[in-house]
Image (cartoon, rainbow, N blue to C red):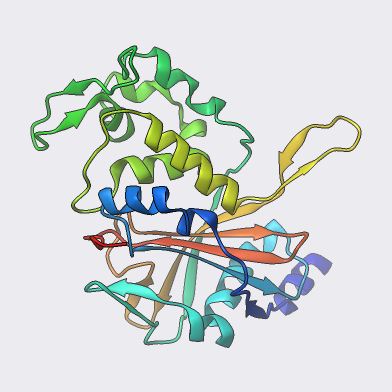
Length: 263
C-alpha cells in the first residue's frame, strides 16, 4: 500500500543536458555509415537530468512525466516530411516496454560467425528473395521468422538492447545501401551501445554489470499515436535509457525514411 501511495504521488522534473555529447553522433566514420544506411539526419540522442529516485516499477509514471515535462516538450523534436518538428499537442498517455539490457561484451553475436551467414572472409552470403533483389543471409536471419537462420538467436537474445541496435543498423532506412561485410554493423553497434549505457564494476568480484534501465516508449496525444511517429514501423523507435545513479535519462530516437546525403 505504501508503494502504491508513493508511486501515485511521485512526479519527476527534467532538465536538458546539452553538454552531454555522444561520440557516435560526432564520429565522421559513423556518420558516413549513417548516410550510407539512409539514417543520417534521422537519428538523435539527447540527455536530461531528473530530480527523483527512479525505480523500474515506476517506469510508466516516469515516461509520462518525461513527455509532459515543459523542459522536455520545449526541446523534443521528431522528424516529419524530412524536417525536425516539435510535438504539436499535449501527451495524454504512453506505452512502455521494458527492454532487457544485460550484455557487457559483443559475445552475443558469436553465433553469426559459425552458422553459414558469413563466408570465411567476413563477407555476407547472398540469397534470393521474392521482394528484395539484393538480399543476404544476415537480413534473412534478422527478419524472416520462417527461415532456417532465424533460429540462430532465441527470443531472449533478440529482446536485448544490444541485439535491437544491431538489427536497427542492419535494416537501415528507406534508401539503405547494405554492407557486403559484417564488420561495419558490429563496430557501429558497439560504439552506440557503449555510448548509451552505464556500467559499474563490483569492487570485490571485478565483474562489470549494466546499471541502465531501458524502456521502449511510444507517446499518444488526443489524436492517437504521435511519438516516435504516427505510424507503427519497426525502424521508427524511441528508447529511454535511464541511469538511476547519475539520475540521467537519454532519449535515443530514429525515424524511418530517407536520410540526408551530405555530412
